[in-house]
Each structure stands twice: as C-alpha cells, then as structure tokens.
Length: 298
Image (cartoon, rainbow, N blue to C red):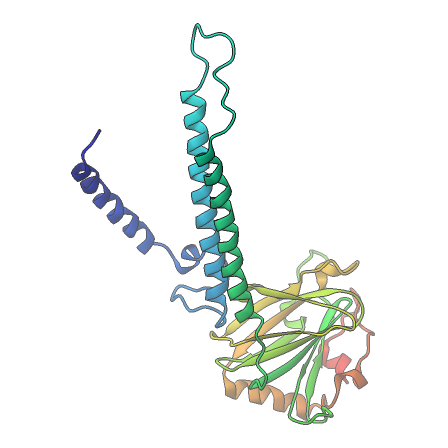
C-alpha cells in the first residue's frame, strides 16, 4: 500500500492539471454547455446563473453517485465471480444491517438535498416584482405572439402594442427573422411579463434565459427578471399547440433604455395604443399570407 505522503504528492499534480483544464473552459462549458452565456461570462438575466448552477451541480452529484455505484458493481462482479473448480451456490447472506441502513439513508439525504436546493431556487425564480420598472403582457395565439407594453393607467389607455404573425418560411424552409414578432426590453431594468393565452395551452420560452412558463386559458402566469446583457435572443412556444406549433417563433431584443423609450414612442406615433384586446385580429396569421405585424396592427 502506498504511504499517505506518496498519495499526497500524487494528488498535487492531479489537482494542478484539473485547475488548468477548468481555467481553459469557456463560460458555456463551465455552465454545462447551456445557452445564455458569452465569452466574458455575462449571463443573459439576473437568474440565468442560478438556473445553470442548479443544473450543473445536480449533474455533478448524480454522476458522482453513479460513478461510485458503477465501481462497486464492478468490484462485486470481479471479486465474487465464480472461480474455476467452484460448484454449487455461494454462501447465502440474509441481511447486512450497516449496508441496508447506508443505502436507505444516503438516497434519502440526496432526495432531501435536491428538494431543498430546488425549492430554494424556485422560490426566488417565482418571486414576482410587485412594482416593476417595465410591465409587459405577452399574449399567445395559434400560432404567433402579441406584446403589450403597459403604462400607468388602469384602463390601459396609455399602453402600446404590437401584433405578430407566425413564421413564414420560403420554399427552402428559410425563415425571415425580421418578420417574426419581437419583444423589446431595456437592459438592467426590472421586467415583469404577464402571460396569457388566446386559445389553447402554450409555453413562453426564451432559450438563452433558461426559463419557460406555460400559458393557460383563464389562468394568467407571470415571470419577473432583469435582462443583464444587450443582444437579440430567440424565443418559441415550448408546448405542442396545434398544426403550426413549429412556426410559433419570436425574437427578444434587449436594448438600452434610450432605444427602448424610442421604440415605445414609435409605436405610439403609429397609433398602436390602448388595450390590445380591442384591436385583436387573427387574420393574416397563416403560412403564405405574407402579412406583417405593422400591417396587422393597423
């Protein structure tokens, strides 16, 4: 058996090698190859890091448990295999209390640990801003999205909105990203999105934000977060909602506060004001119509 001193010296280069490998990893690799991270490590929202940490740490624990289990299984297969010349059955053991206590207590601790960390993070993720700096209502419909930017008035008279159409692929299946419904948000501002459905169950998913929420008839959901990095992000419906579910796409543009205010002013100047419910029109929402959000909003 090697001495403890030798084991200690052997562990040092292994630790250095592991540190070098981890330093060379990109932020996306360090976060389990999840989207939402760029080279400088800036997450897409204030919650992206938390979701990624829950995902990566869970896999580390699970793989560790799996590795130990596989090693023990392999050891038992090798050590207790039938040798040449052996006949009959090996000695039969009825029970082993220490082992039975071990494989009962350890899984219980793991389950409670997973539950506690998940419940903690879920509570934070599901906490809604009561007085957000930006309030948006996202409305799902077969098979597109409408976005209403709410103001301060209870009657929504100072709200502005856009109406979207579903993706319109060309003959080769390519989709013009410029025609997709677009949700515009200011960077570093508290955002609350109220989620509604016009018809069936949909799911609002912004991929790089690492979160999605379902949308039901008669039950509104909400999602609060702070966008922390400017850029364009892809979104889609994550719930099978009908024939053209795959065409239910949208974009999210996170911009500066000045650009966001200018965007709202442009919508106001175009007459897209007031409650979106009164202006709702489901026409021009099928493949090949060639409609646009501006045309449908008039």
